[in-house]
Image (tube, rainbow, N blue to C red):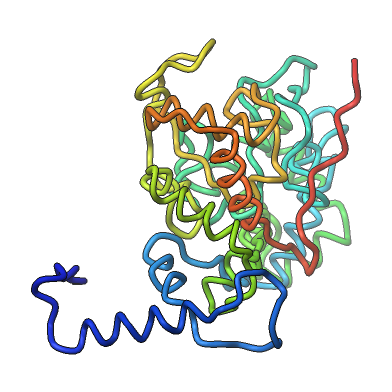
Length: 333
């Protein structure tokens, strides 16, 4: 248990320790990229920040052979009912793991109910889907593969494709010790999804002790993010994704019902516009101001919103060595 000592009853040596930490922090250069390279003593504020947010790991121990199989299936349009779409159609891992549109289209051309969440770091969330009604990655894969509004495939046709393709059938036998079946196909896709992590954001580098990873303005944005209460819901390894919350606590959001949704992750949020479950907000500053008003009862100034946006930009991580980017703009109808 961590004890927060009042100033009047701090144990001997606490004041000296605080003074030493404060002195060390005061001499740190404020700007990212300044100073000599290499690991340095962790700033005291970064130590405190790890009580709120923890860095994304580089891997979750997924089996490489199964990951490779899942990668192929993730892009295989033959698994869909019409042979014209795959997981990557809506979850573009070449950019942000989602898409540029407010709502993707179903197999029959109508918009899906909600905006497509990014596939990156989804394995770090405790439940999936905006409503949090998908308990696990296996459940999510089953829904994506077979539900009519997504790929709309059937297990007999999916397994026929996998078993009939030597590039898949042999590797499945080697990776699972048996012919491809429903459980193995789902596990392969999930193995790949567990590899879709985005470590090495500048904020995570700062958490790990790189004092120059953030600018003074970005650190101020994080302090404001904490100070006004954003971190009450957006915390943990995924900066969200680990609890439910009513939408519109203080103010009802226009054109939205006051439903309870899973708090979304803010990892890579700077490159995953448009925002909210309906994709109804185009820019991050607008989303920040609306959330502050609706969830916290706070009216942010443009400068305050910009400060929080500066911090949120530091949460963009990298996949396979490249920083995530926003996808190409959606074509106009």
